[in-house]
Amino acid sequence: MDPLTRGCFLLSYVNDGTLVVQSKSLFDNCEALKRAYGVIFELFKKFGLALEHDKSEVFHFDRSHSKDNPPVDLGYAPYTRATPLKPKLYWRYLGFYFDRKLTFTEHVRYYSTKALSTALSTVKVMKMLGSSTQGLRPVQKRVLYCACVLPIVTYGFHLWYFAAARCKGALHHLSTMQRSAALWITGAFRTSPTGGVEALAGLPPINLLLRRLSEQADYWFATLTPTHPVRAFLSRFNCGTIAPHPSLSIQTMSEPEIFRTSGTLFESDTNVLALTETLLMMNPLSRPGVRLMDRFADQ
Image (tube, rainbow, N blue to C red):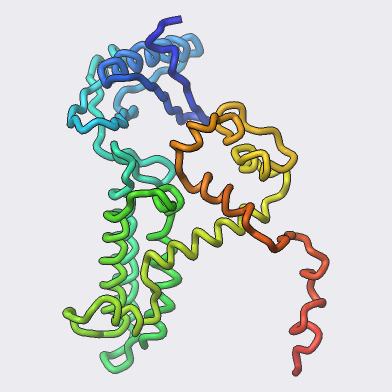
């Protein structure tokens, strides 16, 4: 086996594939990508399939401070010929935006801008149905913000928000977005203090909101069934009855690796152990007709 392509692996689903390569330098990465792509190209060619370069994307994850972003020469291909593939600054995958340093600043900036602009454009359309004296009340604006904006801006927050994460830039983007929303809800002056406007609009600070959502995620972990696939990545205390993942489970990591690694999965795996309440999805007391409001609805 070629030593350069030894660390390569392919993730594929239907007509979408992701080729992952890891090495000590970008130059070695580009060479390994070129050789691995050639192997896959010839394999597809035997099945009568063709890979087009213009539908391919390349992205480098680099921990160094270097700004080098070399292209990858994938060789000759039908329709596109020998065109070097230039890497992108941001990579969109399953709705998430990745940058080279995995700061997720671009992800937060994109969704905060998209959510607020969508909400404000929706409100402008609603105002067309009434006059200037019959616009939306602050309560209705707050409901619109909580229902339409917050779910979008907090999409994927588990990737970048956890205890050891450096997310000041992302929190600043979200705080700026929420300040604009609070000014719109209350109709306050632009020079009003952020904390006062948020309190007047009934909106918790964005860091407290994310902390509450993280705690909810911990309870979701506790209510997973024993055979849920996510439990394959957890430690032996929370894995249930499912077999651990052979390479990505916390159980297969050494103590130094666990000490150096941080993330939402590690945080939730630890926090679930501190829960003292037993959470059962199909608890007999949770069935309809047992609750107090079900029995005495008229009182």
